[in-house]
Image (cartoon, rainbow, N blue to C red):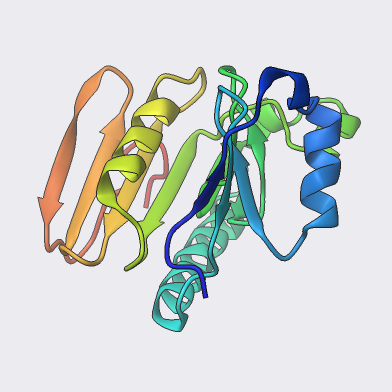
Length: 185
């Protein structure tokens, strides 16, 4: 079993269009695939059972809040988004205000939507190096539309909280993390 992502560096003549990359991901549905702004492809290993359970709990809580709140829609880790940098990312959980989502044509909603979620969560698994996840969170924070990001580091019992234009905040062993004004309650 893989323990860290495989990164395929693609020469310029082999770069895929957005449509080709989407098709590549659909053909390889059992793999978690992302593409950075340079066109390099990362194939992430499946998570272990403990991390998978934690991720499912996070998605469950976000979905329950979304159903109650009604102002947006939530997504699982199998959802890809096309960022303004050209990167294709799949946060472990995410949420978008319904008004922003509804500005996208139906065809864009069916593929890797060209939008950065308002809220993203990345969950560090035991095989993840922290530095690439911190870089990924910084990438999200440079995107238009992002309002809040959490990087949950269960290994070190920390939660990194990101908000645009504000230095990251790191909570040590928190009992809860607040969604602030972005996700009230």
